[in-house]
Length: 328
Image 1 (spheres, rainbow, N blue to C red):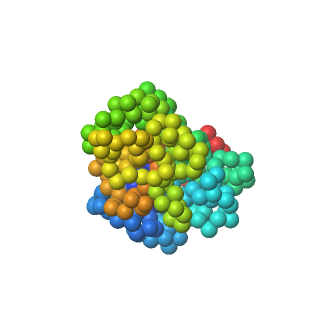
Image 2 (tube, rainbow, N blue to C red; image 1 turned 90 degrees about the horizontal axis):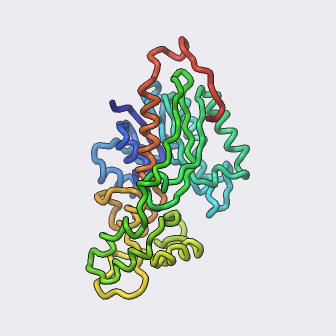
């Protein structure tokens, strides 16, 4: 059974793709940047993509018609790589998400952000969001999930907030880790790395026997495509990867030294299917990929949300209300 969803801050479609895999039918996807909108439309021409500022998106026409409201609101306000301004950052869109929760009144809410959101610095702000969701009539679940626990070959910790409306029997639980599904970077990328007949591919594969550090996409304001700051590059180097830049193609047959990842390799490490297109501009493609939510993780969470929706009470909120919990 398919359930309806709306997603804001859709980016390059990582979360939307994962939720589609879980069985959700996207009624609207809201994204601000044109290149990201073009990416969504190219990969899923039938998706209803609204290329607009979410601050201008009116949720009232969808009130009572949507099962899931999801969004990976911008992470720079909470990222340790930034200034961690939180609510004082102009890019903080939590208020817009809460506005849309009130306007749309979805059965379930899913919000994704970086690990920094769970830091002590943001205790008060995080608690205010939980209280606000409680006041809107939602039980709240909050947990840090590592992408590597769900078959994605990188650590990539992400904070996930799930809100379940109080007229619904709240049986939500976060997905259990599946570490046996995880492969090393070498095993994941071997076919791509050896695509041009590189003689050193097998030796590199044996060296790249770990999962990847968290991929980074960089910001629109700073720098070109690479694999992050010095510490991240050192971790990549231990797996035989040159993190100072991104390659256009796999190494040639007689290549010597450490190869660089291509955008397609990055996308596979992020859990995207190989046919997902990110455009022709390498810098933009790497930013799209590095900032995405891994589809396999979104799918696992989406399947748990579906279990909740399968048990939705047919009674209205006024006739059957389940006592709310603050955080589960």
